[in-house]
Image 1 (cartoon, rainbow, N blue to C red):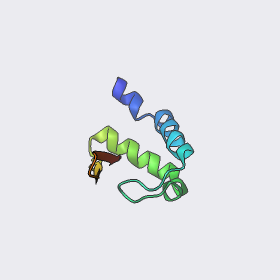
Image 2 (image 1 turned 45 degrees about the horizontal axis):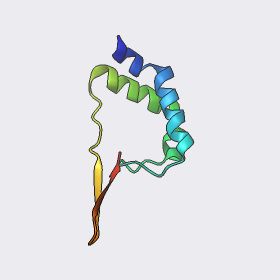
Image 3 (image 1 turned 180 degrees about the vertical axis):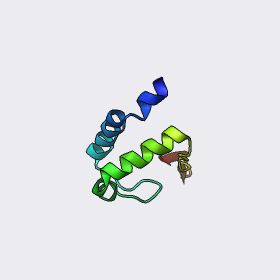
Image 4 (image 1 turned 90 degrees about the vertical axis):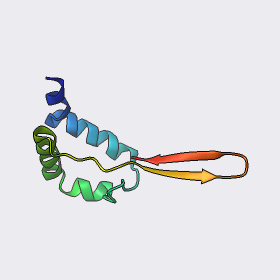
Length: 78
């Protein structure tokens, strides 16, 4: 039952609004907020169907390592 709530239209739209409000750059898939938003209804439906039928495959997370003589930092891109 809880998983059905995850892919409900309301939940996916609320998640999208949160992402859009951050006005961030493209994700690992290189899709910008504006590009995704252009066809938001179709994108939400596609994502919902993929989550429902188990075909959704998230892309891997990119990890960037910044090294200096003093320390090492990792930046993650989700």
